[in-house]
Length: 307
Image (cartoon, rainbow, N blue to C red):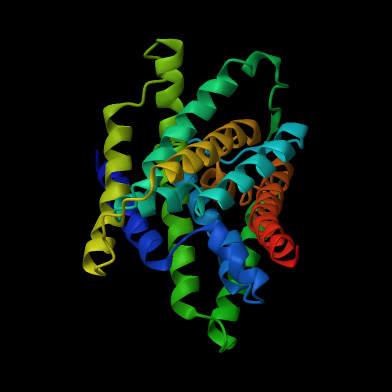
């Protein structure tokens, strides 16, 4: 019970920080294209404090959630689809929930698209290759510790680094990885995936438990609290056709997350800290998909203007 209450607190604070920092891969890629890569790098390295969760797991005799998966074509294709959909949506997994919690009604269509995408892929899941996992490498703990020390040194010594940004991202990664010890599927994408598949398969086996629902509620409550405190909450209604666009974007994200073995939240906080090759491939593919999704519309607009 104590661990559950701590996890609730972690996710509330995580949601608050995600809202105030604007945690989003699409935003990170946008800034990197504008020659400001710091935000993207901070997101990609947010899980380096995962070694703390390894120590806690060892002390509490809890199974470690980190897994190392081999690269498969599904991770590459899934990552590109997810990234392209996220670019269309102008928000990745966590940022979709952040936007929804501050009144962006377009995100309702996006989340609905996630559910449809997962159900569509569930119908062909038996034809996909199984994901093969292996144990963590022996150097895993040391590598994460060294990376943490290097980033800490950068925060202290490099004046151009945004200290608040880096500390917020590291806190998000730490609280996320510790929560994984209690509930490996706490992420919004994990929750909604199991919910949609439970409805599709007409079974309670995958149905999220009441505790998982409370964890998700704590995350959303943290985001909503930040939106209210910063006065960024505003009910935003858009033309009807925009909802169809975001529904399609959500479907791409849902299919992509299923193929890649998880959305960007689980890839960043589980796969990358585990040094999983599949995780690296999925995240790089997501970034490529976001890049294409951001660049193609701009190129089309330029072509239209020239012609």
